[in-house]
Image 1: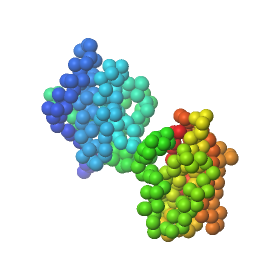
Image 2 (image 1 turned 60 degrees about the horizontal axis):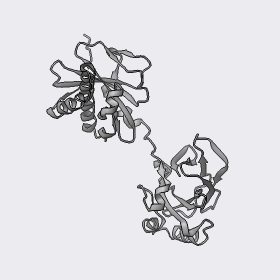
Image 3 (image 1 turned 180 degrees about the vertical axis):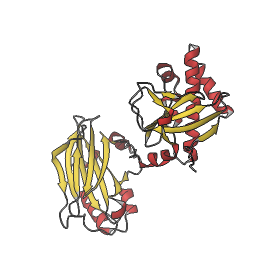
Image 4 (image 1 turned 30 degrees about the vertical axis):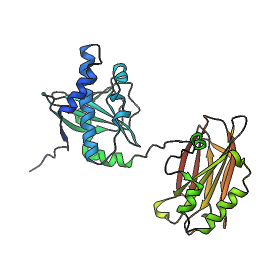
Amino acid sequence: MSHTIEPLTFTVTLALSAHEKAKQFARHQSNQKKAKQVYFNTLAVYAVNFYLQCLGFETELEKSDSWNPVMQSLMDVADLSVKALGKLECRPVLLDSQVCHFPAEWEERIGYVVVQLNESLMEATLLGFVEKVETKELLLSQVRSLEDLPMYLRDLKPISMPVYLKQWFDSVFAAPWQTVEALLLTEAANPAFSTRSTEHRENDTLHPAISVSAGKVIDLAIQLASHRVVLIVTLAAKADEEVDIRLRVCPTGSQRYLPPGLQLIVLDEAAATCPQLQAQARSNDNWIQLEFSGEPGEQFSVKLALGDVTITEDFVI
């Protein structure tokens, strides 16, 4: 005797609030066909949003193009922004559909979820997903099981949001970045760190009157939990609008020295390594640093590498 295992699905009851939102968006459209498209898209996004929130994922409807009447008018869009990961496209299909249609313009997605709407539009069933699409149509029988979606999302690399350094001159620091003084309080158990930070300020070769510093504690890896370091970034505004930048990496916690072989590397906007902007810790090094200048609006990245472990921080001057 053989048994057929039905693929996992998830059915969402489409509440009155979902239909009210769909009607609200549809009223912005000038023709009936477009209004219907927006209505269905809104219900599909609502269903996927409900599902992900049940699983504990943070979503951002207000950052989704599908929640923007202007973008709804310009495109066939049914995206849902998942915090720190990117956008899922939530494609609606009707009960008798055998294929799912994908608009050609929406390729930059972390995945595509197929949502089946029932005849009364009172229920939406998540049928499955695909990681990417290469054609405008896909047979529903070819979608990947919904059971795999949570693990797939958790395995995605979080989007790295850049640090806007200009805000530091206004004393605005996005967590977990904080002033060196605040770091000294949290790292008070490490006298060596306190001493190095004091020397760091007294021997400042930048322009102390118009400079600002902030730092962040970085774990190089879970399995190397003892290798926690502090990345300190010091900025100094110059008369010609250029900004002098100094990067310094110090050990923290109970560590007196940096792990030998730890690399500090600056990458340009194209993610290319700058040959002259690399430093590597040797035995008994208690800090490594790099200095360079940039102009407002320029982007760069800082990479810390130790063995197979790399941590990258993105910045905008």
